[in-house]
Length: 105
Image (tube, rainbow, N blue to C red; front, side, top):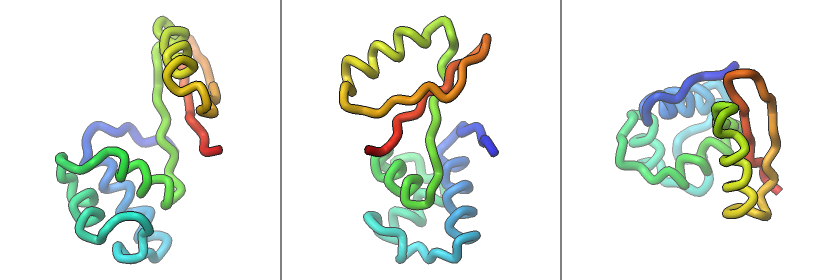
């Protein structure tokens, strides 16, 4: 299932749902405090994005970027230049979008 992320709150809702489905307490998510997780789940928009990505990863949620075909080659070159050691995977390419994923090593 794909969910469009339109706000910090939408990310927080997904995180809370995944955590609850897996019976994980806020205190048991590694790498972040329960206060941070509470704020994230409530949609507080001053949270640190790097820590959000860590929580998503711990809960098994992937983050994908949809890039228009007209800009796909420029984005790919930027990834290759600025993140040469990343594992970038082209997930799909259609007339309207290209989905790029950075996978863990």
